[in-house]
Length: 64
Image (cartoon, rainbow, N blue to C red; front, side, top):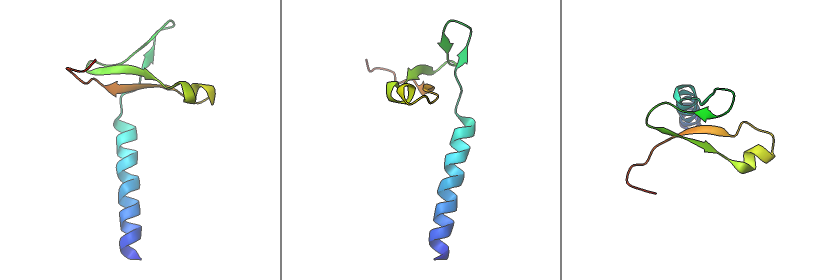
């Protein structure tokens, strides 16, 4: 039982760390932009659900 709790807390801590260190898109009044090395990604399903749907995702070089 203790091991399960420790694993769950570890996974929650990792998820929180990633959420806090994920770059956020900025809005200049007309468009969104992300820091260098990231692309803007908008999820249509999240937009329809009324959630924040613009994210910065790491660029993948060599793939189109």
